[in-house]
Structures are given as C-alpha cells and as structure tokens.
Image 1 (cartoon, rainbow, N blue to C red):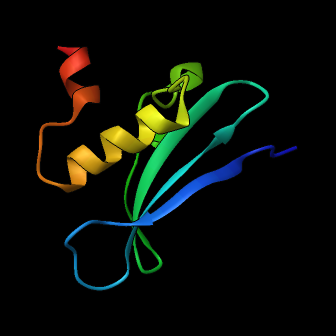
Image 2 (cartoon, rainbow, N blue to C red; image 1 turned 90 degrees about the horizontal axis):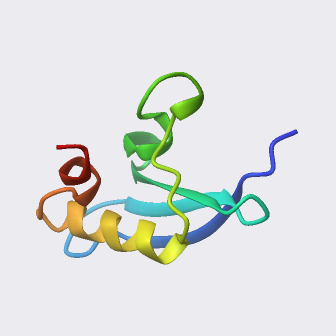
Image 3 (cartoon, helix red, strand yellow; image 1 turned 90 degrees about the vertical axis):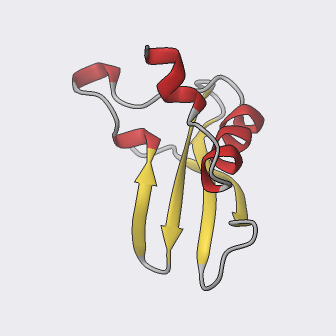
Amino acid sequence: MDTTTLIHRVAVPYSMGDRMIEVYGDPEMGWYEWRVLDGQRTEKDTGTEGIGKSRGRMYGSPEIALRDALMVTSGMDDPGLLRER
C-alpha cells in the first residue's frame, strides 16, 4: 500500500513554464523526498537516488527537503551531494 503524501507543491522560482517542486513522503514514517517536474516530465527526484533499501535521501523534515530543492533549482550546489563527499 502506497502511503506517500504530497506535502508541498511550489513553482520553481524565476522559471518559465510549468516547472514545479514537489515535496512528498510518509509523515507517519517520518521520511520525505523532493522532485522537480517540468510539465509531465520529472527532471530530478531524490526518491530514486541510491540502490536497494537505501533508495532516496530520507529527509526527516519536509521543510529541509524543500530548502534543498529551492537551493538546487536556484543554481546553488546540491547539499545532498555535498554530504556524500
């Protein structure tokens, strides 16, 4: 059973077209991910990163996931990738 809930959906700042940021997750389990959509196409989805059971970044806060998405779509370094170094 899919218990994924859409938490935030905001337009990508300063972008043209239908680019949107979505933060989704499972509030009961306390995990969240973010994705960038351009119309029907997914540009990036942190929930598909990694392999096996370690898939996704598993943010503990939807607000931190949104912060990272806003940083990335604004042209800043991806904080999630910086943590992996």
